[in-house]
Amino acid sequence: MAEHITLEVVTPEKYVVSEEVQIVAAPGLFGEFGVLTGHTPFMTALKTGTVRYTDANGSEHHVFVSGGFAEALPDKVTVLAESAERRRDIDLERALAAKERAEKRLAEERTRDEIEFTRARIALERAINRIRLAKTRKQ
Amino acid sequence: MPTLKDIENKIKAVKKTQQITKAMNMVAASRLRGSQTTMEAFRPYAGKFAEVLGSLAERAEEGANPLLVPRETVKSIHIVLCTSDRGLCGGFNTNLIHRAEKLTAEKQQGNPTVSFTCFGKKGRDWARKARQTITEEHVGIVGTQFGFNVAATAGRKLVEGFLQGEFDEVHVVYAEFLSMARQLPVAKQLLPIPPIEKVEEQDREKAAAYLPEHICEPSPEQLLGEMLPRNVYVQLYSALLETSTSEHAARMMAMDNATKACKDMLENLTLIYNKARQAAITAELMDIVGGAEALRG
Image (cartoon, each protein chain N blue to C red):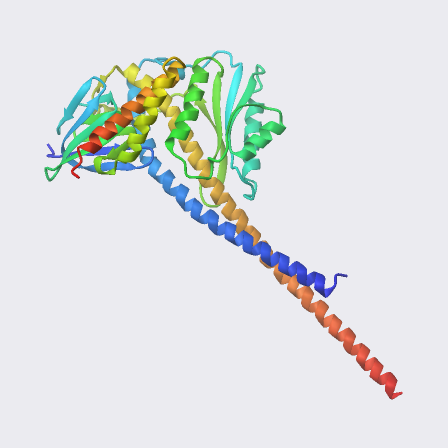
């Protein structure tokens, strides 16, 4: 059995990750799961959060994902996400601004449209996850 | 008979037009490169998405999702018409609008009401003139660089409209980018989602060996429910990208032809100009010679 698995993180805009890795951990809808080589075929929706993986050289990487699905095969993990960024590519300023915006909207919309409310809540969740991940960067 | 001055002015005008068409050609070429890159970047996602969706559809129950079920009577049809915002791109928009007209004609059985979502100014203007119902219009998107969320927002409304029974069928009319010289107007059904291509019969055994039952979280039906609306956004996004790329290609071709036509015209005009100038000189010479002869007596 191969020693490494191929990890692919794809968004409509680009290939975010495509490399050989040792282990992948992703935030599944029912909790975080880890994938090593030889995993049983598995498919799940993902929560907004962080996909972590250890590359072939043993260093750890973090990728923010939101609105995605993951498919694990014995030798391959595919993550399809609506948006995904490596930790170093996260725009902290923008995320902070988005957080503020979402909070303001939540405060306003609370009594109004339910769809608007949910949308703002999801935006807030995305922003918070981005910020949390960006803050773990080495300065 | 135009005077020399007239012809000269005409030549100047044509030269200026040629400069403009040449510049537009180059602008279109660079934009084309941009949207082609976006299209290429999207391809892996679309491919993977179709793959995963196909293997899910394989195992989900028939009619597991309302988005898959055709309505028995189709009372209202919704058409998403993708055209460009700007003209000067040959028959590009006309062809797309013809395709939309043809689609409406085909669907006349049962006399359904037809409504439109228009991407692009040209299609919207046509729909207004033809007194069609326009549910939504998006101007300033086709032909620019736009993100997936544009398609997602518009797609979400289509899915909601379908589920609430506002539309019984949703189609998209767009220009498929075949090559630089060929863009084909295409009509595709978005909703209900046409049967998803399952794994080919002969490949099935191979696939079964390679793809034993997946464990799914949540159940395949629920996952499918999550993925199907997104499939609509994916289709819509790809239609918009194709249309954008096609628009630039069509404009490039049109401007190239215009530049060539200008060149031909300039050649002709220069010829006429030279002839006229020669004729004038000859006439003047005749005058002088005639005058001199007369003086000599």
